[in-house]
Image 1 (spheres, one colour):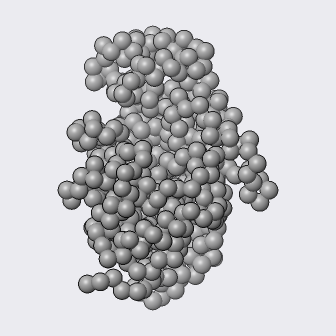
Image 2: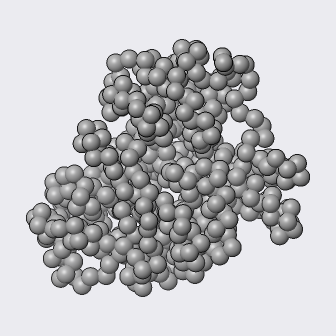
Length: 474
């Protein structure tokens, strides 16, 4: 059936079918929908804003960087080569776009479909559903828009009402693009935009990371420290954090496979470090080293105030063939069971009651919400719960999160929302979904006479804006 002319997104999308609940949710949402966006954790690129160059084409912008998109296509047998994934300059972006359009039906019922339809309608004015029949129309309209000044990265930053946008950066990054933004003449309402780096030390704290030993050596060169020794290595990390903090960084990010922490004596920590540096470590040694490094990162956060964000629970790069051919982050990270209660105990024994320490916990293991995460965050002053991410940043996932954590941790031991995306144009859509679903949950509490509507409105504003500013020290 050919796509028919219509609105791609409905004004009442995601709101309850029950009229009374829908009316409450709508009222709450209308009060918060225009609040500025704060994106404290994501994977956009500072270079986009430093250079402010036009995005090249729809495929390069919307298909290639978004693992939500290409992992679904790959799951249906579409080659990543045909999608030109990992290619610096696409040979035939229109062909890639046509493949995407012909298979757009695969995204029915997914949050990806909502995010994309939002961008298609709200940004590009498209109202016919994407399909094989409309593929070229979409490609031409979007391409034309991308050539205009209104669709340059800086203009979109302003259009999205972004107040803060944090990137994710290797300790080996020079951060030159961040410096360029900070020192340039671009202003938003008279103020330099807050595009901030986030310290992601995985390349130099994970012995399984490709080139780990070489990365540590480079860290030493960049900081003027002898990073081949345990003490010099820790000094090099501290100096790098200082460099990030000088450019506005307020948070660290850690892609450890587990939440395990350790509290080793200095001599034992140095021994394990020497084993991983000389490639004599086995899998147990590597996990122990990562565990100790989470504790060392916490120690440094107590010192310098950077907010800490571990993202455990992902078996990263599960598809070995794809990893070997295309590298990291190709949509093959798979959720796995995660322990927090015993894993975090060594770290929390040391720093759980520190006033200058904030640890935001994320998970891909939803079974831990009510059993472990909410009780932990409902007790330790340093702990906050991050929002549902990756596989669970869907309407249903957001409701499951609220249902399982609110009774124990409340709203104020959570940190609002972050979009955690590489897909720049999806940022306002993702925040819109989160705001709608928070209002759906709050509407239920109002309808059940568990909250008054004025209280619900205050909570809605906090979840959309205030909590994230406070948690990330923004």
